[in-house]
Picture 1 (cartoon, rainbow, N blue to C red):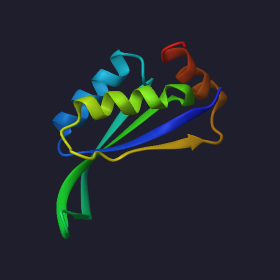
Picture 2: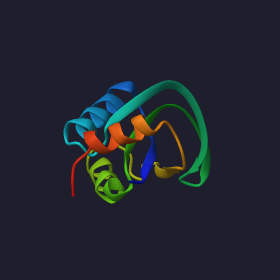
Picture 3: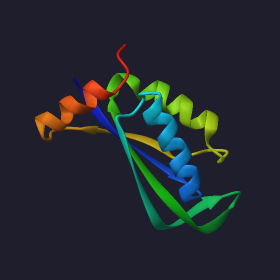
Picture 4: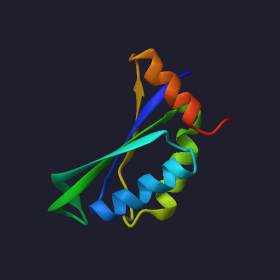
Length: 106
């Protein structure tokens, strides 16, 4: 079973919490971590922007990534949200099995 981290940025802790609860309760993710206090500098609308953002890290099985991305896009406030999937190459076998058990079966 292949597992992935999903890196998502949000505009607030409240939005991150809403998305995280949705993903976990629907079993699209086994777990999500919210990291507050990120400073982002990026191009948007033809100019450099600087904002405070919140990182949301979700853990899921690779087969659920397309559905997870679709769900996040449906509830996210950003016009073009950052949603990036990163394969987990190795890790604690018991943790990897836990992700598999706690996510939606195909």
